[in-house]
Image (tube, rainbow, N blue to C red; front, side):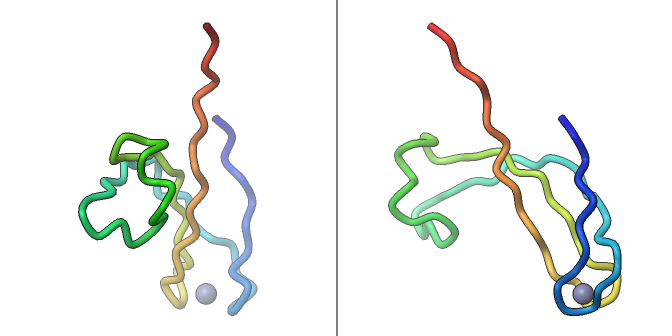
Amino acid sequence: MKIRTIYCPYCNVLMEYKGTKRIQLGRTGFILGDLDNLFSGALSASIYECPKCGKLELFRYKKTKRK
Ligand SMILES: [Zn+2]
């Protein structure tokens, strides 16, 4: 997958790519709430972090499914 060039909206500096992580959506479901069931409790996301202020940007990694 591609690495995007993203600038922090607050600091206007280039955000660092931190990798693609599997995020567990548990009982709290605090990130995506009602989308929980679509991902069976977990999703993969690419994470970017601003080196200056620490803002995190997540992009959902979509698998292309074909039947
Ligand atoms: Zn920042």
